[in-house]
Every structure is written in C-alpha cells, then in structure tokens.
Image (cartoon, rainbow, N blue to C red):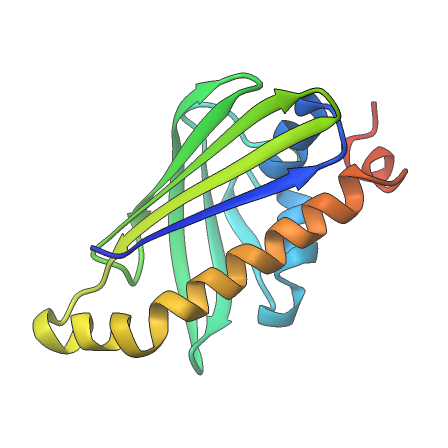
Length: 158
C-alpha cells in the first residue's frame, strides 16, 4: 500500500492552518484544475468530525466520485479523512499540525490502495503515487498561500 509523507512549514498559527485544511472552499480552489466540486454532505464551510463530503472531479481522463468521512479529530492538532466510496480500494489521509516558534509544521500522511491486483500495483509504482503527491503538494501550496497572507480572512470569515 503506497504511503505519501509530506511536511511543510507554514508561517501562520496552528489554528489557522488547521481550519484552512478543513475548508471545503479552499479545497475547491486548490483543485480547480480538476473541476473538483463538493456535491453532497458538507459542501461548504469547515468539515468536522463524523461529517462526510462527496467530491466529483476529473482525474486521469475520467470523472470520478469519492465520498470521504472525517473519522478522527483533535482540534487543532490533527484530523483524519477516509474514503467511504470511490475509485480506490482504500484511502486514508492523516493531517497533523505542530505549532513551532515561528509557525506551523503541517504533516500529511496519505495511504491508498488501488483495485485491480498486480496491474493496480504496477500502475501505483509507475504513475499514481507521483500523481497523488503532486495533488497534495498543490493543495498544500494553496493552504500556505492563504495562511501566510490576508487571504485566509476571505475563506474563514471570522
């Protein structure tokens, strides 16, 4: 089962980074190039514990639908979302946040498993792992851009 582990420094308070990471609106902005839309469940605002969101997006030349549920949350230090329905055999995304002196360390641990046995494993090795890592990196860059500027105020509206 492939695992992607990313760590990013964001010069912003942990509470802001945590909330931006749960923002449906910011996720849509980060994934605009895939046409990602929240179509059911929590479709706006901040997703919370035991809530679901169903996404549609075009990935790998096909419109995909994935329903995820937030299965764990320790505010503002971590939350986990897991696929309930979708194209993967399984998918789990752990988001961890650690306040440090001058900002926040945001840590993603993303594990997934594809269907299709040996062919799926070969596809993971050749292409899918890199594709997923690029998507997560894009999302993290947008979170950082918003967290480190005044743009966060337009998303979180406090």
